[in-house]
Length: 185
Image (cartoon, rainbow, N blue to C red; front, top):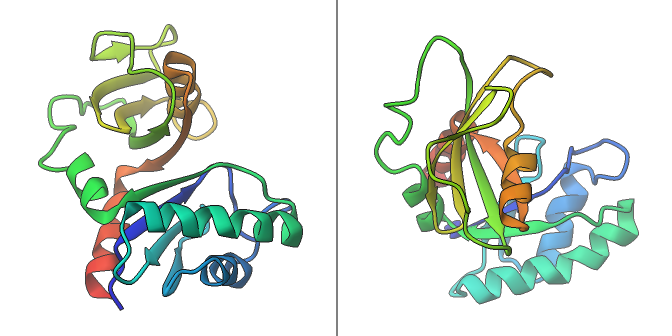
């Protein structure tokens, strides 16, 4: 099987209330028309094979799975779909090289659909000095969170407020592991 796309669900935590279990998530995408679906970690990130289909096919599969997820567990959150090429391009090179320092907690990749382009000059720092947005590319904003677990900057909230779009965030490490898993499949 060849995975061509990634589905990034917003606010999904597999097995928790309002979210499906792994098997139900994968089954909903298969029933929606995917050739293969492999859930990656527990954060609502799924590798998707749509055969010879394109971005529109992957989006249609995700839309078809939505009512199945809602009926099965009550999940009604957003699903952002990206090609593996788009995900790879989002982190191409070392986009965080000039922003790392001793206060860095997480380097983040925030995927965003809809809304307007960021209306702030980059790099941008939030008022609490816990989040820097460092780069924006089509459908993605890269950031650096500081402050540690539960006290750090929140890229989802910042990107949604600044764009009016819907966002979901993964760490740089998660995205790298996802791309490695897709390459091994």
